[in-house]
Picture 1 (tube, helix red, strand yellow):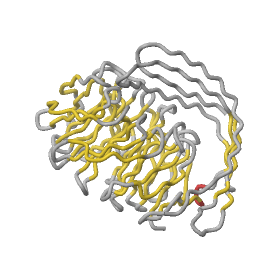
Picture 2 (spheres, rainbow, N blue to C red; picture 1 turned 135 degrees about the horizontal axis):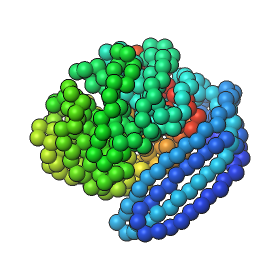
Picture 3 (cartoon, rainbow, N blue to C red; picture 1 turned 120 degrees about the horizontal axis):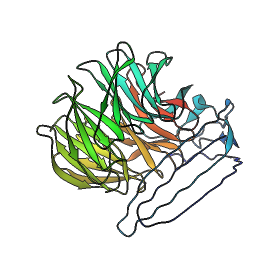
Length: 401
């Protein structure tokens, strides 16, 4: 294994932090507006020459994040506000991985999008990528063949989760700052309806191919999953689910859905054949992202304050491995071409950790900008896309190039 790269980073920050501790839950919000300067040079440590990072861009924005964390020993409430300006010198296209495993990954390109990009979905019918913009209150539509931004679609407040329904060629968007899910016609890229959901703050929406329904998770409200008929876009019912349902993954081998309970430190198991809750799996602290790996039938859960990924065997629904990754893993995605799991260390070392789905060990680590978050696989170039929520860039990570 090659040694990690070393880097020289100069950062000037003006930080105003207000912290209050109360009994309850841990809450934090980050507001970032313009004031640090970053220059980086890298030595791969693998015999390659040092590379000067020389592509510059500057940006100003506002990023707000919140999270509720609960541990077995205590609960706390904390609020933090950070303010700074920044100019970044960084060449994404010349960034290699920290070390090399069976696959050599690198960022081969990047392109800019709107305000605070968050989560993706891919539309195979039209070969388009849909990206929610958290503070832009819209969805950016990207041509997957040339990465050109085609249009932006205004939706509700603070859109987060997004999914594609192939049965009716529609895109569903969870608006966490509104009380509804927006429905977009993928042929016209226009909003055709808004579906009000239980709880009032949907953070995630998932298409279920077994029953052709949509499942919207509500984290900020009382905790519920709203079930939407995909043919009529009408609410069928809702499932009460305490513990903060945040994201959902579907396993086609057993028709089960797995909903991470962020505050509860567990994963609820839902049988989509009758929409009943059939189990609960303890994972790490504050699970934040989940993805299904069809090559091995396992589910991978990113544990935000556990700095780890829990691996769940879907044959008996228990944790079979825990993989250490960088601090604050948020986003998680699956690369079907390499059968690898990509995990973003969003508020840690700002890298993407790449897990081998066969061995469940970290094969590679790729520096991924300021705040890497969501992932999507693009079959047009067989690469993974990760958004940088701070700089408003999409980075393209490819394997074997």
